[in-house]
Amino acid sequence: MGREASTRATVYFEPELHRALRLKAAHLHRSVSEIVNDAVREALREDREDLAAFQDRIAEPEISYEALLEDLKAHGKL
Image (cartoon, rainbow, N blue to C red; front, side, top):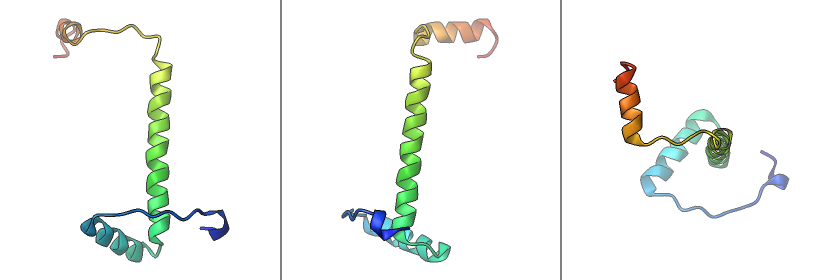
C-alpha cells in the first residue's frame, strides 16, 4: 500500500472486532489498513453491482407477491 496515495481516517471498532482484525492481519502478514481497505472496496463493488442490476431491470413489469405465488404454483415450482 503506497502511503503517499492514502488518506488517514479514524475508525472505531468494537473491541472483539478489532482483536479479530488484528489477529487476521498478523496471520496473513498484512496490515489492518490493507484488510479494511479490501473489505470496504468489496462492499462498494457489491453495491455498484446491485445498482447496475436494478438499472438493468428497471423496465421490467412489477408483479405483486400474491401474483408471484400464484404463478409459481401454476407452474409447479411451489
